[in-house]
Image: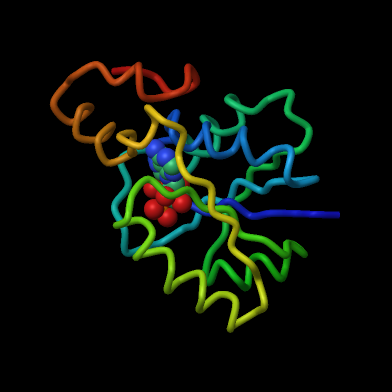
Length: 151
Ligand code: ADP
């Protein structure tokens, strides 16, 4: 069973995440969308909302499971028997950031990170931009799946 964990804050899930997840589906038997809980971080959407947006977006997709976790991503992968971490790359800043984490996770637990480069036209999308637009009362519907309310 090829199982991957796609870790993130998903605050909120965007069409950029969707792009990576949908293109990764043929590569794995199961993908766990894993929302990491970081008590030091302030989120715009509650944990319950972020779980609900993911579940609604992928309802009917039997290969996708939504979970939350505390602590190290590699510890969660070991617990879930997932040999792979999935991450998306938008640009060289993402690459530099992800490189050391991926190398460290491999040394810590032998877990390989599989990187997919965002599709053309998707690399400008980020949860940060969605949150900024929301904060200023703007319309962010072209950046998120239908499950995320636009107001
Ligand atoms: P984190 O807080 O861990 O960065 P995010 O929810 O922001 O979590 O992102 C989770 C993953 O999705 C990361 O690998 C990130 O690079 C990827 N990602 C986010 N937006 C895009 C996008 N537009 N194209 C490709 N990958 C993306």
